[in-house]
Length: 93
Image (cartoon, rainbow, N blue to C red; front, side, top):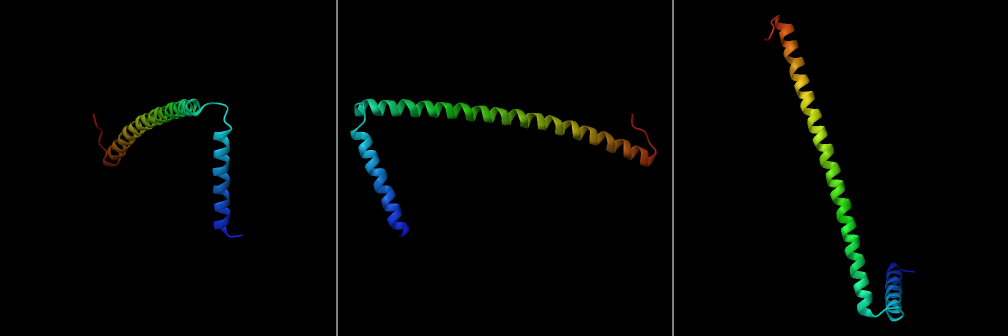
């Protein structure tokens, strides 16, 4: 069986299922569209909240890492200065 026939069969099945669902729906079309719209709005809001939470979490982690890098740079600069002082025999004030 060719893949074209399989795809056409699947599309036909989807179309028949959608048509049967609309014809046999327990609510009027306007009510069904309103329910679909409300659900999609709720899903969009939920997704938006999850995305904002993810971004906030990422921002917090980035800030923490930035602070840790700053501390490492300061520690590294201090160690380097002490190493130079030790190598040259001088002391910084």
